[in-house]
Length: 197
Picture 1 (cartoon, rainbow, N blue to C red):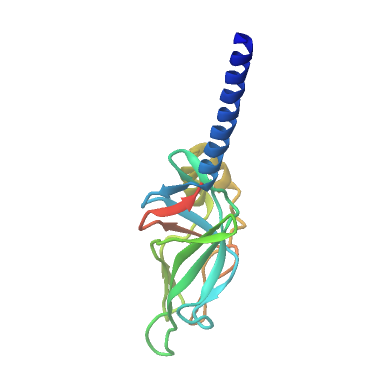
Picture 2 (tube, rainbow, N blue to C red; picture 1 turned 90 degrees about the vertical axis):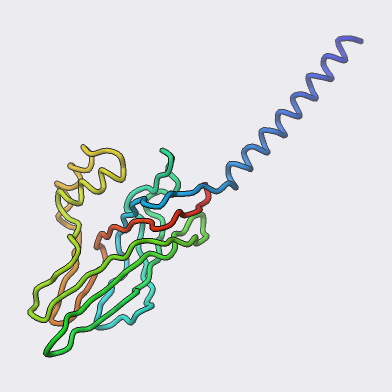
């Protein structure tokens, strides 16, 4: 009789453990995590943005170039889709002025759902003389240092920088400024982002 009671109690504990384990797994899968403001987001452009063709509000598509990490955990892996917006587009006149593009990220896709992002702007400004004045473009050793810093591996970043010659860069063609496909752009989260984990 006592043995039967022990076996029954053991069976009940086993069932409870299974149920609790299932609940914990569901909670982890359905939970959200906050990626703090100041986190760097490096993306690779899929679309080309051109100051002579695309109006303000034009939405572009990019992919995450490095893992998005928070508290030491990979929240969003590299390769996920990121959406952005052309916040400002100014085309230079024939005599005076300069062309200008201002880009910002708006959403990141996780498990098929788009979640909002509020990032810093990436501004590119040209000049009527044909010379370009812009934020420092990402390429070579500088690109490797940024990738290594985001990924937490400076040595790996240096190696990447040494082989990053094929990365596209911002170009000025006449009065127009163009951010071509494959260009790497760096943004910074201005507000914390709540994303599924």
